Image (tube, rainbow over all chains, first blue to last red):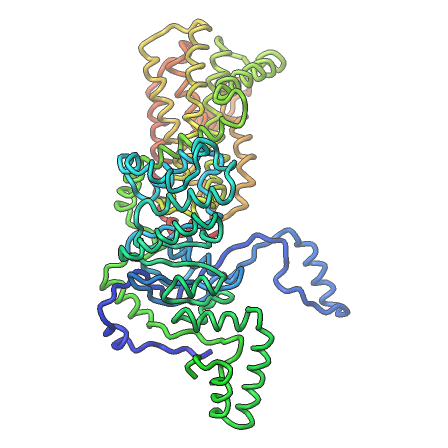
Length: 307
Length: 303
């Protein structure tokens, strides 16, 4: 694993961009209480392993497993950026963003944030048994609004969420789209310094998505930083000016959305097997004809790849 | 060029840790996931007082909305429980030895013990049961054990009013000491907050402790004099060592029940010892609990 470090002088000499998130070697480990075993492979005809199996079977239903959701991730995000976070399901991207929003403390490493972060997520319901009205109060109070400010903004929030009479019904009776709209309306009732959007835009109808995009643009213009999680590379490429690729908890790419999305689709996209063949070919060419020939080959596959 | 392929293994360039810290310091960024100072934490908590109240009210509403009679159950439930306990312990088993007004004795013990046991049962589990909320909103986590316990006391409010009615009906003379009744309940509340604060961090760190909670509450229910007089039952043994009686009478839950009974029941005069010990327990537990919980801030939400 080649670790490169930025020259600190060069890094600080960049024009006066104000950092909003500084992550330094952040790792997040979850404790999962699970009866499962860490390794599933064991020899079948070995006598010692038979004993081990017996012990294992006896201890089924007992035990804790540690899951490393995020491993040693470092990056600096600046004000005014909108950053897409790409990754397949379970790659640790949501966990990382929850940490950025100050919700899940990192296990090791350090993370600094500038100002207040708000998380928008589909699955993040507040109190499902309470009405939308009470949830607006709780959510807005938790975002640091005073009761007077909430009274002032209350009608705006309800209007934006567009849930009509459901406002007085418990949130457990809402459709997932309605709940997502209400969450979105609450989390954006103040402009947070850092807005973390966790696939909230994938639910809701087209009109709502349009309004949501409009509001995200507004927040970006007010010098906040927006993180957008998605496993749709197209959405990231169109909405963001920077992308991070998280794969199995590790940050593998950080840069312009188009090439980063390209890397991601090469591993997980529809044509992944084609790319696998192409890379096999490239490695063969490197061995047989050297680097230059391989570079030519890559340029032929992808003229804009910057090889 | 060797690291190309569909499965790259390198990490993008990053700042060394010291430079990252310096960069963060230069622009005044605050570190996430670390415990704030105690003073800052208290100020933060004060800033969230409205949220605390809204959440406590919400808990109360959520608990009482899933049925037709709604919050009426918070009166009906303790009354029905009181009747069944009276039938079991007052009539069938006969634990009323040495108590004149057993109805008042029993109902006070029962109605005050319910929020205490709930604080021990659900208050200590709150960091696990509210994980979803912890993972979607930022606020000082100490709000959670505090509000859940507070909500149980708000729910018990109607039952406390019923206690006054029962005392009146059962012929207790109305005295100025009745004014101490709400004060005593507040002292019990503070004690329960202490229990919830200490317990919730323990359960968060060692989850298995949650399985002991039902055992502990059950034990406390039977040794704290909810439906019998500790004093009278100690007398039945010949010559127990004195400290046994003191422990039984002055452990936090037992002293809490006595504290509430004394102003309401003529046969138990208000004693300064009860108040001194109860106040020491409740504020001691609360302060120790608050500091204990605060020291774990910045770790909650990961388990």
